[in-house]
Length: 121
Image (cartoon, rainbow, N blue to C red):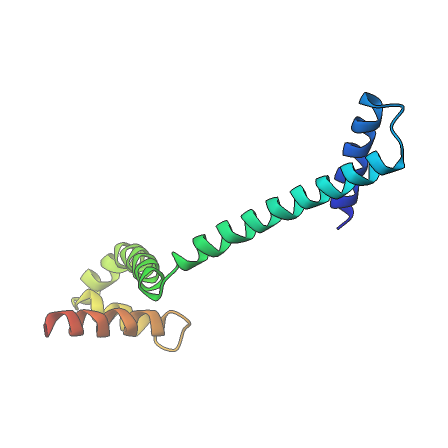
């Protein structure tokens, strides 16, 4: 709100410099018109924000989450591949073994359930 008052004060000073002999009515009219223009600009910003927010759909969120999960899984797979080779077991078994009980276990389970669901189609 303070920024709005600063903008209004700056605009008033600019107007007064251009019109040094203006009277109270002119100043009041200018302030009211300037305030209305600020309100209109704010309504435009709110409408634009609302429009942008409608673009965020559950499908977009799911797609972004899937991309993130895939990136994490790719990094983990690359890091754990030597362990899987050493233990002579699959990478999925190594991932399950290493991350069982950690915060990444749900991510791995989610990835596996999505692959299973995609494979059943």
